[in-house]
Image 1: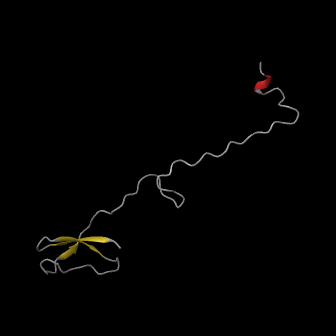
Image 2: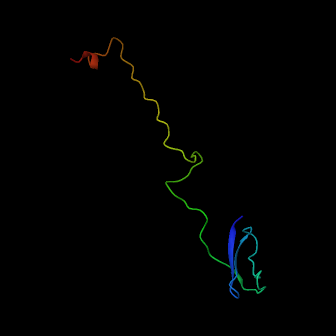
Image 3: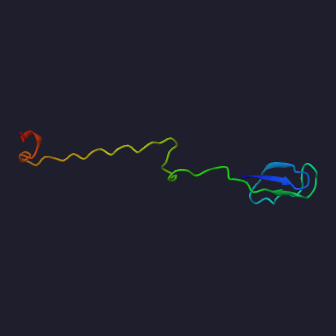
Length: 88
């Protein structure tokens, strides 16, 4: 449930209230009982940073593990003289 900030225009009383989004806004000030209690516009309580978040992401995760290198199999009958063992 979101937290909404309210402020009374009559007495200046200010308070946060936990309400459902479907609840009607409060209008009666708990301090002076006037009908001048209005909902304030405030900043959201979270920030989005980085390139994004996906279901496969984990908190504190680093880079993914490197994939194993593919090994090339030598052709039958040797390397044909193109390897380091024939250089020299």
